[in-house]
Amino acid sequence: MFESKTLLMFFTTSILLALSPGPDNLFVMTQAAQQGRKAGLLVTLGLCTGLLVHTAAVSLGLAALFMASQVAFNLLKFAGAGYLIYLAGVAFRAGAVSDPAEPAVPLPPAALYRRGIIMNITNPKVSIFFLAFLPQFADPANGSLSLQLLLLGGVFIVATIIVFGGISLVAGVFGELFRQSAFAQKLLNRAAAGIFIALALKLALAQR
Image (cartoon, helix red, strand yellow):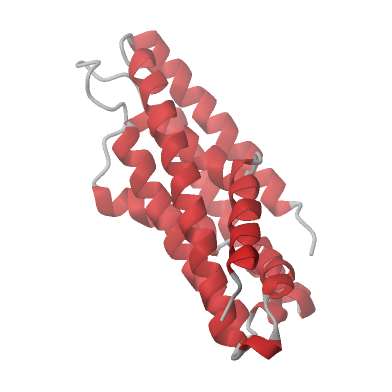
């Protein structure tokens, strides 16, 4: 369906896009620093599940709705901004734990995975980005466009897992150092709250 050079070009571009600073990789870094490498990996899996939703939306043409409808775009982005503000409040209220070896805000795996999903699917700009990006590498002469878009979305997800997984491991190591003292734990939580608020404002002010 695709020539190897086309897939290689798409994969390389996807890696570079995942590495560029953005809300998702910053969110992963913050979660891993706060709660450990495993938390970052779980959030990454959640984000990638959200990418499956956006890929399906592009394949089915639903992403065009967010491009055409200001109301739909605003409803989704404000829901995402509200969720980030909620997370900021949770992080700000979190204090230090008695055992520095434990995460400052322990959460079950399902909650961390869910955070990643909600963070991703409530950002309509991801669907619009996929709508603009994926079709550039699809060709009607190679068969079903929907299948091609789904395959490209899967390759993008693989690239995201590789990059965000690396971010989780690195941020988790630095987070462990911060969790060695109560003051550093509180400082990390306050920083996380500030990052969530900044991401919420960026999403709330986003335009199509």
